Length: 96
Image 1 (tube, one colour):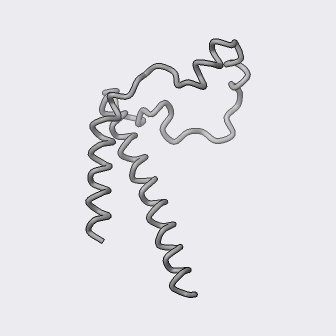
Image 2 (cartoon, rainbow, N blue to C red):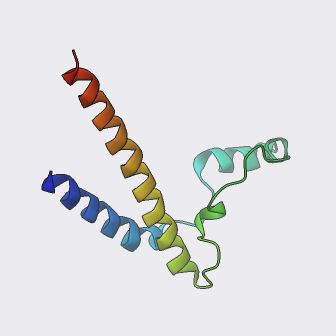
Image 3 (cartoon, one colour):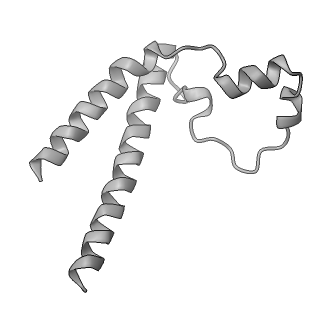
């Protein structure tokens, strides 16, 4: 069990340190959409608003810190979902 928490700690450190170093350039799909002129067709009314738009944690002025906070929160959410799913699967298998 402690190994899981060690992995989580390492993932949080990586997210906090490397998130601010991510490229601000558009990703591949966005770049192709811009180059081929259909980027505007993807714009419109959002069905769901992003919790952390553009990977910048709201309310934090410093962009690097805001990006690191977004990376840490994203890591925690992903870990929580994966951990919960793993426990659910383990519980189902134990009941068989």
